[in-house]
Length: 365
Ligand SMILES: [Zn+2]
Image 1 (cartoon, rainbow, N blue to C red):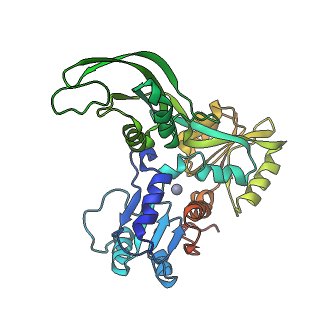
Image 2 (cartoon, rainbow, N blue to C red; image 1 turned 180 degrees about the vertical axis):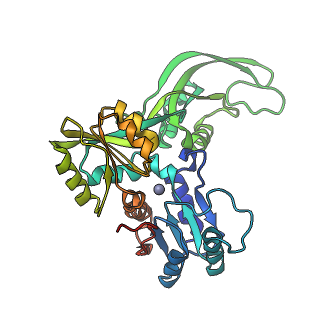
Image 3 (cartoon, rainbow, N blue to C red; image 1 turned 90 degrees about the horizontal axis):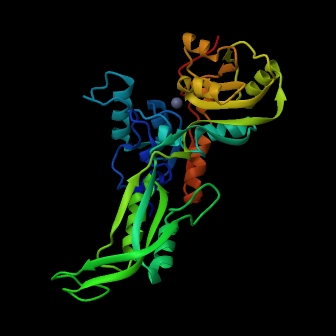
């Protein structure tokens, strides 16, 4: 029988907490992971209504985009909606799991969903993150290099864009002396050994470090493996905030707004004046995306589609592009389907239900 943790550990791997923003709170937030999983409900928010819905549908796990515990809880007395939601979840035995900015920052995440709905071609990350790529340097006796490298590549190291098995090697001489208690693969205790070895360098994304090092140690023939891991300043094109791509055909401003409303199922939106030029290049960021206005402008976007933009922030469009604020809920509601697909990919037989509760606290009049 499937346990809650089978699913949550899988999600931890696919949407690693390593890539969340520093202020965020992701992963399993409420409840023990050891119980049997009865069903999963996917929602945008965790609210009391969603928990009641999950119970009614026989689901004891809610996977949501927004974490209900965000700032830190000092008491559980039911005095506000956060405390009441957590208390109800505990009372009903419903576990709460969040995939938030760690999902936003994936190139297959929330922003990709918006980009795809708008039909953007060749979407790329608008603000790729640095310091998420690492370099492994290790030394391998020559006859074992290929097999050790294969084991490391199997764990995802050495992937650069559409190229796999990327590494660099140079031949040199390794030296070591086995001391008492050692069981050297090469040479004998007390002898200074000199062995022809390959020095190998390979890059990997930081969330794979544990697996890559484990694979190295398992495949390497030596009792003690010499290796170094360096953090790099390199930009990771696959991790970061927002996305930018191009519409199949340029559109006039009003036509673009109509298209946006239709594709994102909007009743209303707020926008800055239309730019002079037709709209072709479009940047997107689901949720609160003001922090990327300048990046969108610098990247040459004709329009930037996001939410939660404040009055003064709209001025940052500088008449060079149009900012369209489509609403936080509206920009992220399709995240439910994204989460459902992620779960279904590995657990095709599990019952995954999309919450029907409209958690949007806003109404338009
Ligand atoms: Zn959000």
